Image (cartoon, rainbow, N blue to C red; front, side):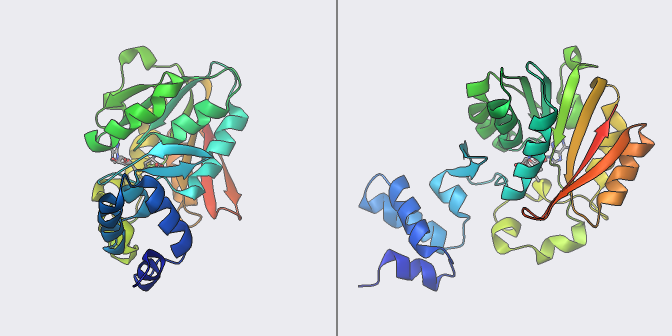
Length: 253
Ligand SMILES: C[S@@+](CC[C@H](N)C(=O)[O-])C[C@H]1O[C@@H](n2cnc3c(N)ncnc32)[C@H](O)[C@@H]1O
């Protein structure tokens, strides 16, 4: 009889043994395991099937219809934590399932005042659960329009992983992203930077004096991301991680 590992390997899962263990761990019984295995073999992201993604050593709840937090975004978290003082007001804008904000909150000694916002209610259903252990508040709406007026001028750290894939490149993404994550979470417009420009333009009203905005981008797009932030009156620097293949622009009010 063909084993689950063999079926996963035949379906193209490189880490078939590990995946089989994770699927078995998520299943309530044999029937449920068969159901989960069929979804994975059918091409759904493993994280959607098991219901969680590991991020910065934490389990973040995630599921069908939501963007899966990427390992490379752990670099942005690392940079944000290095800049955060105890009690910092942290806003995770375009938060998806809230992984970035939750991971920052988990790592800052003394904790932070955490806010997370996104336009997609499906993602926010997970974000609510992921930020709850840190007393986080979740807001729904289009970028800054989601936020309560009481946050104006108070944000010490604005962390952003917004969509930045150029529209023409969506078709080249792996099927797990293209077919299973919302287009809204991937598509950044013609040059990928539509949301970056809007985040930059609106940031001054929400950042505290000396507050920082950290935004994930690609190395190719980073000069344009930085120039959008510069045009909004912020001083920028770009940091990179070879290990995580990650680029972050850090801007200061
Ligand atoms: C690349 S995903 C990243 C999610 C999360 N920051 C992470 O790294 O896991 C981008 C997120 O931006 C959200 N988004 C796209 N357009 C938005 C808008 N106009 N206002 C608020 N959120 C938006 C999407 O719903 C999606 O959750």
